[in-house]
Length: 456
Image (cartoon, rainbow, N blue to C red; front, side, top):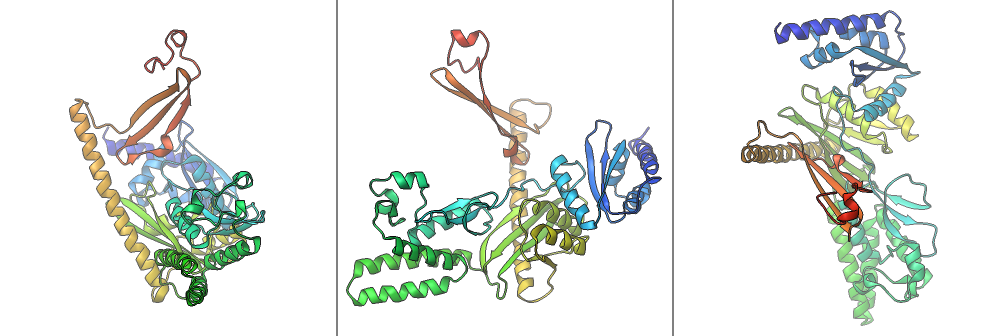
């Protein structure tokens, strides 16, 4: 039997399975799961009308090769009815994240974004990087697109406003200024080198700056610097000069032409060579908090609209969406997605696909960045594959390795042994597969040869 005949035969069996479920399926919104004989979830889908959506899989001639294969592997299905289409969208995203189905478009990196926090539970507030639920008392600014971006911003803010970054326990135990004071990145409130009132003024300036009013703060500093110069207090004036330079540096990095847009995410997609890149720009308080590229898997054959829809559902499962999200392409269910995100955010969220003006220019910029990112990714992937091919030649392997695991271990004079594993493949290093092992015992040899790495 040919491969085509086998696929057709298995597809017919899958259709028969689906038709059995159709007899009792309701016409309400909901989520369905297609599962194979090993009980692995192949696909998670949502529907405005469960019966109508599931019945579409019975007409194989109108489906892509990928969907026909999925139907052929389906042994049984599971269903969850919901009250609204919006609920179905949110549930679908959560189930995709939980099961990582083979036939769904998957967002690989869905970590929450970092924020800058100015604490509100201390007489001398601390400025720090913060990730997680915003339960701590204080003001949060962000989100920032990457840890590197927030670290660079924090370093410059320390230069500009001289706020402490140390923990409260360190603050209370200091008896003399630390190195940050010596390099002019802290005002040393821990040892009383600045009054509570003066420090509060610095905190207020930082809050105004992070709220998007950078020009106002720079103008105030410039006027104060000129006043000190007129009084021949040049050393104090030079400190203000350095602070102004730091603010100018951070402003130039975050500057983006977005008139009239205070809060928005810009989401743009580009596809090439069967791969897709989603570029996200983050605007808050009229300030650009950076951009980040995502490379969803299982996108070969998917439309731009399907990729956008899958990305939005998964991306905002652990993030608060802004009031406005600008898109390069329509989502497959734009209104339903708006309703779902609005419910999650507790406020009205609008999805727009601009066709002209400043908003369109922002989306165009994001899409250009997506093109550049996917070119870099394909180039890196090509180089990685060449390295793996050369490795297989050197080691006389029958085929190019798809996964390489590297192990190492360490110990302290034969005690406290730990091991580590890193993993790489055709797309580079797979950080999610990294593991650390606590080595408790390696048998009788452990007593006779402590520190024997090979025995470990």
